[in-house]
Image: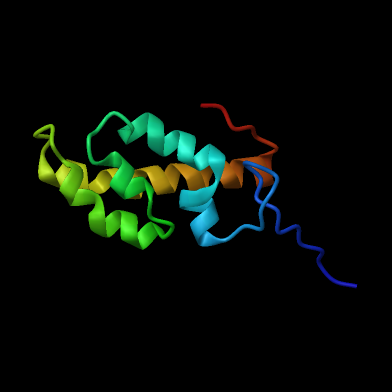
Length: 99
């Protein structure tokens, strides 16, 4: 006996859940990133990364709108927290994902 764990990612129901898939590679997560920064010139550079750390490291280079630097630097962390929260809501509270 023991706990049976389903490793399928709950947002897309396809791949095994990894950190990279959860925050970057999942098609649903990609839609969220695109909605947030898809209109920026350098967004495609950021979205080519498959590692959340690489996105965070590259993030400052796409601030072309004059948004305050302190606020701008928080955006990827906030988005990843929202993705994590939605994931947990689906798993633990039978929630849904809507964009």
